[in-house]
Length: 323
Image (cartoon, rainbow, N blue to C red; front, side):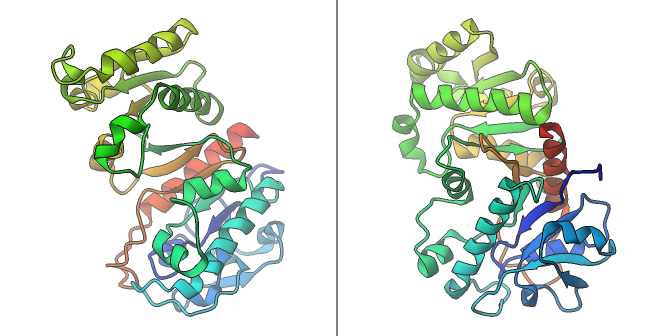
């Protein structure tokens, strides 16, 4: 760890999910130095941990001891059974981690998965998800969700909405904003001076000249032409079914997709365990494992920490580039 680069801050997420056990499995592993924010009572039995008051204090701990900044929770953790009573503790862990990162005491934020319904039921959580909450904590900035692995980066223009709502939600203004944020993020956080972006069509075969829909002609192409005139390196709109084979992926640095599954199916097929959720547009680095709480396997010793490991490594790389 270079001098001056603070440890990563890892928020606990829902303690009823696999977050605590995946963190515990990375103690002593070859990963960037991090601190964990949560209730130590929620860690698996026998986890070696020590309480710290500040992230800097983690430097004095042995590598096989988890540095914990304790956040008291109202209830114990029962694997697979989310408890709304713990909603306030989960939110506090996220808020505290963001404060540490924004103060420079932590170099980046890595968030373990949450359950939005439990947060809504227990604390009136008013945000669709982690990404929107973090944007709120950052002052209301525009953000986009990127899913990234070694072989592919994808950004959905529309995210957690019904498929029937995608056409009316997808506007020229939204698409332009997503492309601009992705372009800037690839330069700042991934070290790509001239990002190459491939843009999918909305309809099958990218509309096939208007036979299967004209969104590509009336909406997507004008946005791309306008940005190309500014110097953006863009291809598309492309048929989504031919964008993700190896030869196609070699021609771009990130794919802009029109809706959730169009983006997430290919990356989860290519690298289900190693994908990372990245929020672009924030004034700080944030990554997360590309999976949910996995209640069905929580507490059974089956959780794979590969995505959390990848999220830690990517957060560290991004923080170094910003530093």
